[in-house]
Length: 487
Image 1: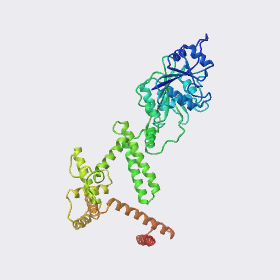
Image 2: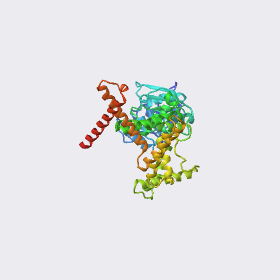
Image 3: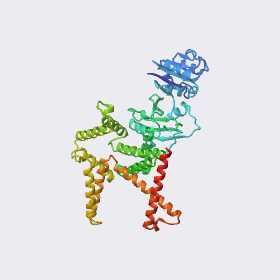
Image 4: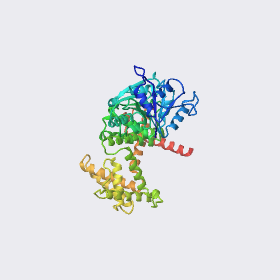
């Protein structure tokens, strides 16, 4: 990889050429100046070098910056080049920044007393724009705007550099450009273009290094990666106080709430609300993954990798050689694969082990019933289940109201009805939720009808309730019939 040194001409109090400048010119393989006359040409010859002019490189005196950059890059392909200018650091607008944009070049600047001079002058910054100068150790909690210049000082070792890169990663995209200015032993500064992501992985960094982070005037990208980045910002030092104090345990209830709200949107047929609620569910997933990463247990990449592997493993009829032509065959394969997975993990327990006990009771009963039936604990047909339903009803009737026995018998009856639902191919949880929704709908119709007649439902007699209930049922059936006729 070639190298280019941008050398400014300075003289000491006696008028002699600065020793650092003379030394840098003398050791260059090629020394470039704009023209064969003037201050630069005289200084180069004083240093004992033979200059190469822009004209020698086939460049006009007013060549655009891009042409100068390409010519210098070509010359520096396999040698050390010094670009000498009397007007340093204003070599020419666009030249220094253009050279830095070439990742195949190493760029040094001579001589300057401070890397801030390099960054402010050599990189042609708009000094009227907002800027922030932050010490590396204060960076995680510092306040600054992404659309302003940022100069990070005090990057004295690789550990501080990596920490700075990680801190910047909370606010900038991984590939966002920055420039490191590192002091050289002979008085110059080495400029290294890099990225936020690369800085977070850097292995070597010299004392006194300063980083210039270019403004980011582009809106953050949409998509899953940006969601992960935002959650990282919320959980990081200086982030949101509420988000930072959350744990897996405190977030558990929110996971349930968001899932139920998504289900409600599905039941209501509100697809716009569903899109919003699914985002809330996804946020919970990313939050848990971030906490897992902080604890060193797992991160979002592992979460995604695991579910991809699981989907492929449990769909051998799609990603493997197995066959499954009906939903029933898919389900049987699925259950068999899950049993194999439990055995491979060494999970002890019987047929019912692994069914999540924190599920809603009706859903839990349905899964237990299905698991037991798959193991052979089931009658040949639904007739036996109907007989069991009537048996449980009789036992419940005989129980003393409010007694522990009554509690047990109600549970037995509900569990048996879940078995009926399974035999009928009905999801018991879904069926009951539909009935609850229907009840709410009809009751609200009763309230409206009572209000229309100047009454409050709380003051109705049971006979009036029955009359309004039947009216609500009739209206619902009539509305459903009209809808079917219209379709």
